[in-house]
Structure formats: C-alpha cells, structure tokens
Image 1 (cartoon, rainbow, N blue to C red):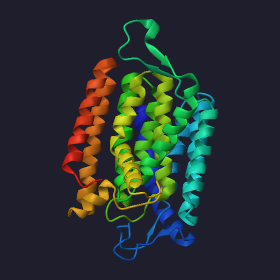
Image 2 (spheres, rainbow, N blue to C red):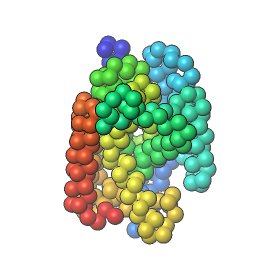
Image 3 (cartoon, rainbow, N blue to C red):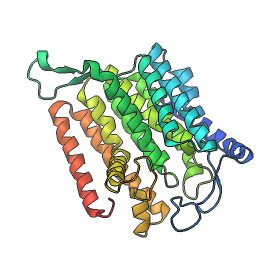
Length: 344
C-alpha cells in the first residue's frame, strides 16, 4: 500500500512542478490557443492560453510507471510506447493543427503497437453461465478489431470532452481513482500503480487548469489520457478475464463515452462530418442554459462521480448481479438526458 501512495504523490509532485515550465515553453515556441472571434466560435476562453500541459501530465505519469511498476514483459512496454506515440501525435497537432485523418492515423498506429506487444481482449465471461464449460467466451479473431476499436474510441472520448477548464483532467481523475479501487479489490498490483500514477498526474495538473485556466493540456494531453485509460482497461482484462473487466471502465467513463456517442449521432443526423467540431456537447449546452464554467464543470464532476460509484458496484457485485448495477447506471443516464432534452 505504501508503494501505491508513493506512486500517487510522486506523480502529483512531478506534474505540479513541471506544469509552470511547460507554460513558459508553450509561450516561447508558439503552442498557444487563441480565443475564437465571433459568436460562432467554439472556444470559451477569453485570452491566449498555452497548451502544452499534456507534457507535464505525461512526465508525471511515465516516470513513476517506469521506476515503480514491476517489469511484466512486453505488455507494459506496449502501453508506455503506445501512449508516447499518441502523445507525440497530439503535441504535433497542438503546433500544426493536423487534419482529422492524420490524427486518426497516428492513433491507429499507437493502438496497433499496443496490440502487437501482447495487449488485447481475448476472453469475456458469460454472467449467465451455469457450468464451467460455458463460463467463458473466447472472441478469437475478433480480439484485434475489438481492442483496436476500444483503444481509438476511448482515446477520442477524452479529447472530445476537453472543452472547459478542468473538465477532462477532473473526469480522468475520477475515472482513474475508480479503476484504482476496483484493481485493489481484484489484487491487480501493476494496475493499481498505473491508475495511481494517472490520478496523481491529472490532479497535479488540475490547480493550473481549473477555471480560469493558466494552461491547457492540449490534444497531446487529452489523447494521452484517453489512450492510457483505454490501455489500463485492456490490461485489466488480461488479469481478470470477465465481462466486469470491460463493464467497469465503460461505466466509469460513462460521461465522455455517452457524450461522444451523441456527438456522432448528432453529426450524422445533421449531415456533418463525424470529425467536424461543433457546439453541441453537453458542456456547451450547460453554458447555454446559464451555468458558469465552474458550475458546469462541477456538475459534470458529480455526474462522473455517480458513474464511478456505479462502476464500483459492478466491480464488487460480480456476475449477473453486476448487470443490475449497469442497468441502474443506464437508467440514471437516460433520466439525465431526458432532463437535458436539448442536448441532441
């Protein structure tokens, strides 16, 4: 337990210390996010803001991970290498504004490296099984495409919700702490260290990123966080080959996943390109309804917290009972969407 606490403190301290340095670096090298002009602009900040905070988050995560996690072969290196590649794609985008195709191509390469080095979802359990012979589902040839879809999908969910000061960092912190607690229940030591490092690095960044933000994480940070969350979930399935292993992160990340789903649906319905940004995300709708940035972010933190508690219930319930918790979380979400009827 002491090692897990040390990991968290080390990650938090590194990120907190390095973030001001990244702020200076961003201003000097031109990685600055300027406010949109006109009423149609998507950005809600009102002053030029540096956007290399993701580098501080990355270093806060990667240094404890390299030094404190017991070596487990190529799978861990696959996570760290893939995360480094996707961070590089995001940082280049922070400077050059890459096209959606190039960004997606970089994400696919990073995910394929992760998969090639031994990380994939191979087994799911059958919660209705009555005997050992049908207790597990082997997905065989679907392992690679399913894992690839999961990796790229979750990577982009965090990127898409990174629209308000502190939102992506806070939601990631809540999700990573949720996964940490589940990993503790399951005795998955390396997963606990990874999630402790991720929670520490995001919380170390949050004081600089909460409204009014002094620095943004940029696409480098948001893509990196999404990739690591997705990768941790996949590695969890390698140690706990159950339907719960994917259900827990799906519910823990319920807010960004659902927001992404409705963004895709909304853009498809309106005939817009899937990757074309718009102002229809939940955080934009909350601002339109009169909430301040802080109020909107705190509200969305609370929603993520509810999903986190649902994920913990799933992890603790096991088997078919976990599905009741999953259904309850879905009903809460549907009720929330009903109340926010203009979301889509």
